[in-house]
Length: 197
Image (cartoon, rainbow, N blue to C red; front, side, top):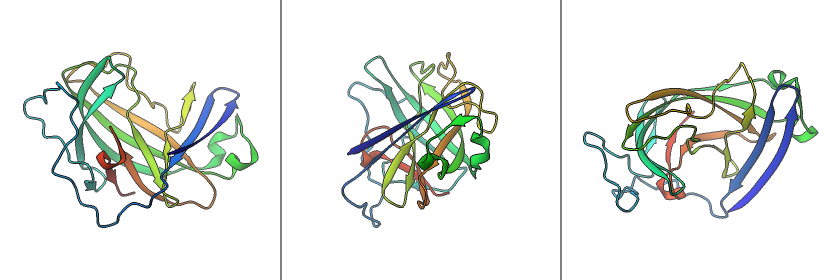
């Protein structure tokens, strides 16, 4: 997997861009696998059904996966992509961006996350990517400071089992590329659950 990273600093915030692409094209006929990736020793909480990798969902439909944060924590989370909104580069007028980034197309993705347990996930970033038509997965841009069009990209500092949060993730797609899906990828590419914009 190739990785591309660009840094851009704004007057009131900092923005980091990046992306990774696969050398092989995805199989359009791939269906959801019956196997679900679960870390060794992890017990799925009662009442939670994990969503198989490869599942394709409409906006507003939830998916449950296991999110692992390094070696310190693993918890089941239920994620719902509630809205995908095309933004405007005018929203970034106070950022110092290079010429290429200024030609990007911003998307703001609103997601709902519920911690199903058993571990706390405070401050963690949910592994959600924008997948474009060049088969590149773009991570959410890391914005430090206040960004009114899309204010919160990480989970609260305290995010214990049973807690829920609404996040807004910012993605800048390079000029000429189209958004194909929003991918929740807790492990490898085969584990990804996707929502169509």
